[in-house]
Each structure stands twice: as C-alpha cells, then as structure tokens.
Image (cartoon, rainbow, N blue to C red; front, side, top):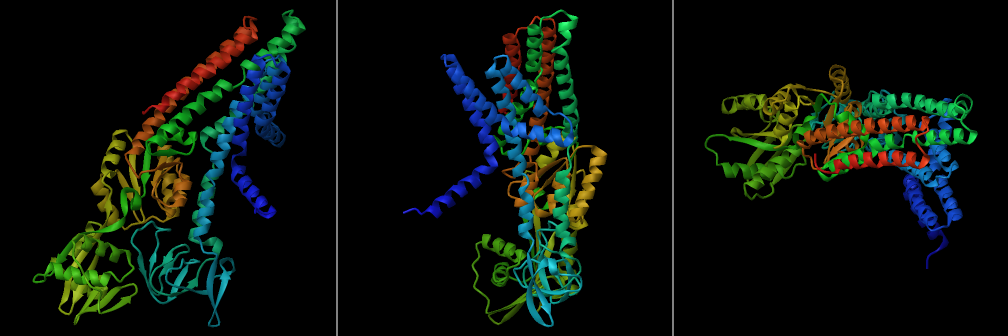
Length: 635
C-alpha cells in the first residue's frame, strides 16, 4: 500500500522533472486554449470564448509579461515583451481576441524554447566540477588525514594512490608513476612522472603512489582555470545579440510613440472622429507588432536544426547557426578529433634471427599484465595476429619505465629506451627509432639477455574521413589549423599527412584560448572542433564550438554544435545548411518588414480595415513560416 510519504516523494519528483519545462508547457497549453476559444466563438458561445481567450492570455503571456515588466523596471527602458503584450491587449480591445492570443502564443513559445536551451547549456560547469576531487589525503607529522581541497595551502604534502585523481597542482617529491593528463593536455598517451615533475589537478594517477608538494591553492589550479575560462566565455554576448538588445528599445519606443500620436493627432489635424482615431491607433498597434519578424527567424531556425539532427548534426541554437555561416577559419584539436584518440601499433621491427611469432607471444604475455594504454594497444595488435600466449611466470611493473618478466627461464624487459638501454635502442635497426620519432610515433622496446629484441612503434591513427573533410573546407575558402598539446614532431607529422593549412603544438588549455582569440582578431568568425575536457575553454571562446559525439560530457555540453557520429565531413554540410538558413531568414525579414510598412501606410490613409490588417499581418506570418519550413529538406 502506498504511503503518504511515498506519494509526496513521487509528486516532488514529477515537479522536479517538469520545472525546467514549465514555460514551454504553459505556452503549448495556451495554444490549446486558443483553439478551444476559436471553436466556442464559431459555435456562438462568445462569452465563454472570451473567458477562454483571457485564460490563454494569462497562461501563455505570464512568463514573458513578468520578464518584460521586470526588465523595464530594472533597465528603465521598454522592450519587445512589453510591446507584444500591449499589441495583444490592443487587439482584444477592439474585439479581435483570437489575433491577440496568437500573438501571445507565438512569442511565449519562442521564449520558452530559448529558456529551455539556455538552461541546458549551463550543465557543463557541474560536469567539470564532478571531475575535480573534493578531498585530498594530507600528510601531517607522518599521519595520513583526509581534508577538503580548499584547506590545502602551498607547501602541504599529499599522497595520491593509483587510480585516484590528483587533487591539487604540485610537484612530485617522492615516488614515480604514470599520469593520464588527457583532462589537461588532450594527449592520449599517459606521461611518466618522477621526482621533481609537475602534476596537475584533475589528472589521473595510473600506476604508482606518489607524494606531492602542493604548489597552488584549489582556486588557482590549472583545472580551475579551465572552469573559469568556460564560465567567462559563455557570459560574453555575441555581436548579433548585442545588436538585438540595442534595437529592441528603439523599436518599442518608436511604435508606442507613433501609436500615441495616432490616438490624438488625426482628430485635430485630419478631422477624424474620436472613434475612427482610436480604431486606427489600435489597428496600427496590431499591424506594427513584430509577430512576422519573430516568425521570420524561429521556424527557419527550428527547421534547420531538425534537418541537421536528421543528418547527424546537433545545433544548440539559432545563434550558432548564424555564426557558422560566417566562419572563415576552423581550429581542430588533434586527439579524438582529427585522430581516433587511441594509439595503435603501426610498425614492429625484430632483431635478425628471432622468430616473429615467438617474440610477439612473449611480448603479449608480459604486456597483458600491464594496465598501461600502450600495453593494451600492443596486446590488441598481437591478438589480431591470432597468436595465443600464456601468462608470465614472473612479472614486475617498474612504474614510469616499463615492465619486466620471466617466461620459462628467459627474462624480458619491455618499455622505454632508458629502461632497456638507450645506446642499444638508438642504434637498433640502423637507428630506425629516429625515423619513427620524425613520423610522430611513440616507440617501446623489447629486450632479452642478448640486447634489444624488437622495437614497436605506435601512433594515434588519423580518421579515414579527416583528409576529405579538410579538403572540402579548404575548397570553401576556410582556413584550417590544428591546436594540440602534442610535441612538435608529432604535430608536424599529422599536419603533413592531413594537409592542414597550419598547426600549433604543445598547447595547454589556456594557450589554446589565446590562439583562438588571435584567430578571432585575424579572421573575425572562428570555429573550434574538439572532444576533450581540455578543449572546453577553446570551444567556449570560439565563435562556434563543435564537439565530437564520442567526446567528453564537458565538451559536448560546452559546444554549440555536436557531430553525433564523429563524422568530420558533416562540418561542411553544417556550414552549407547555415548559409542557406541565412538566405531564407534575410528573405523573410525583408518580406515581413515590407508587409508591415505597407500595412502601416495603408492604415494611415484609411484604406485598411482591421480584418484586412489582421489578414495581411497573419498572412505574412504564415508565408514566412512556410518559407522557413523549406529548410526541413536536405541542403
């Protein structure tokens, strides 16, 4: 039997889920009431229909009216929200309840969708905060104590165990390990760290326990800077938004001033009657309302968004579609964007006289017991060769260097050059490791008692569609540049293979933001394509942020556009769709303004009665909506 507490909990849960959508629900419900009022009016129930229309006015217009009144009081300036309310009231005052209610419905629906999108776009900050650890294992007088990260100060010593995230920026004072710095640099391959090496909050300690001397407070860490950069970039308004806000107050003042004049001057100057004067003023208020202008943008925008979603492109708002049509340069992250985001074996060079299958089996046997991403890549490669292998008789993981093990009576070492012998590694196979380095590949070595037995090269493989995508964009006259945290050699190899126009290597997140700002100054409108947490500030700073669908939650939430299938050529499709939308919006705006101007002039010369004014006003609205719906078809 359901208890009272359970019923309350269920109701609270339902309310919590509906709360973010309450404005949209109210707008849609007002639309239902408008249909009901129209039906009642058509069937002779005029009094009841008026009450239903009044309900539609209150329910649909409450949020926008409240917003308009509060903004007017706060900014001491009238706005479009107030004009729409007055236009609807004026329409009702002369007996046209349906038209007034429709004005409220269209404006309320656009505001509800805007509010819903804005609320959704703020979630990336909470996603970032979830990644940063709240507590740290603090060492005080040799005793471990768990404290909140905000209590840490410079000089404190903390311990970070394998699998834990580093809670603060600092320097390793004892121990060595491997750190996954993808959250900061975007580099897919973990970095070996030893005493004296710098570590950053939010990165993952993978292998060994380390003691860290804290060098920055929690509000000064590099990871916190990422959060601050995202917040700062999102708070900046686009040029279009600033123009709309400037235009809004002027438009409302002009319309209301003209309506006020129309209520008096024709009586004195043109010998109109008071009834005719008031009638013409109300017609003006109705036909001058920006209903058609609003419809010029929203249906086209929603149609383009639907078209994009159907083709694997998720747009988060019309402003981003507008900005995309003006893009002159696109910056790409490397790892997970231009590349697959995980290392794969590209070359295996074996010492003369060794059996390839036996050597690979020995390597797989030892590497299968390591949790390092490079080891996983090697094992995957050997498994694809359909070679079976048994576990080693003995294994030791030498953190930061490699692994060593015994198979049968033979001892093996697998790891970096310094672990197996730098001199032998450098000269092995006529110094082929140098060639691999120039190609941007990472190398690991296998050694036995006789020396280097093999060198294995790995690389983050470029996506098959990357070259095609870049070529299409360059044909459209768009400058392409790669921003990556990788080394100069790796970046040069990737750029050469993909035919990028330019690249910048060894970029930390705040440096990527600086480079994006430089591109903005040079090209005006710039897009950024990325997939990692480290890309979030640059995605937020760019005119348009584009995230890969398989990227981090933070990148997906921060971005303005998401490629749901990680299909880079879709960027060019999105740009073409954006440009088509811009053409249609311009057509709609010019048409709607022309119709409004014609209606206003006709009303002034007493050649326009209210029914024809409503017909022209609503007819133009319907036409621009239909024109916008053409974007539902593929570009």
